[in-house]
Image (cartoon, rainbow, N blue to C red):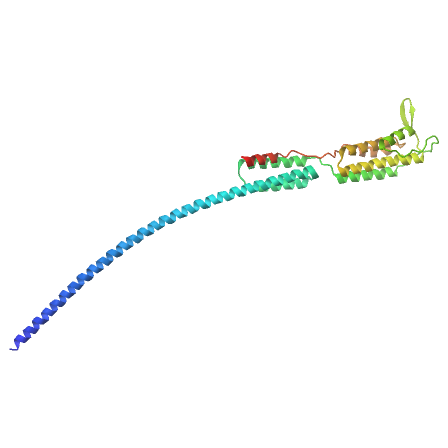
Length: 297
């Protein structure tokens, strides 16, 4: 009788064990399916993400390429604008140099302005601009060769001649038949009076005669006045007036009864001054036409 209950307990235990095993099997199967699905989803998401990353990389590459193209075009546009600004500035400097030569005869400033213009064009590499730079170099050489009178030196030289003339003694022994000269209305009229009063005809050749004190004073004053007129012509840069005044002074000096050795130094100085031209020295600036034609091209 004790064996039957024990056997029933064993059977119940076995059945319980079997159910537990079945439940564990079902649980394992379920979680296996779930885990498989999760892994499949994870792998799918990973592939999707990898594809998305690849697509994103391609997009970034395209954006980078586009950005480089935009930056390159912007750099080219900026360079072109900078080149145009440099060309315009150089043209202004060249025109200033031309004005400096034409109006003020200032070689040094004109050359400095042309050198600045050349520096502005140094970064522009076009053929037209290189031709303009060559023209600038030629213009500089032409300016260097210009003969521009030194007005201060001319003025000082004329002042020196005036001082020398003031020291001359024009009169010699008084001559009773020579009347004092009257003030003339013009330098030419005065010179004619001087010639008439201090010269006599010998075989149709005018020969200077001794001057009275008054006549000598007027003669000297005439020379000094002509030299002063020449100085004024220098200040006004009037070439014709300058040479006319020198000619009158030289002609009047020739009438003075002075030794040739006394007159010669002064006459040589006046001859030297006569060789000077006060006309504005200028050149045709080739660089202007070269740079303007370069702008058009």
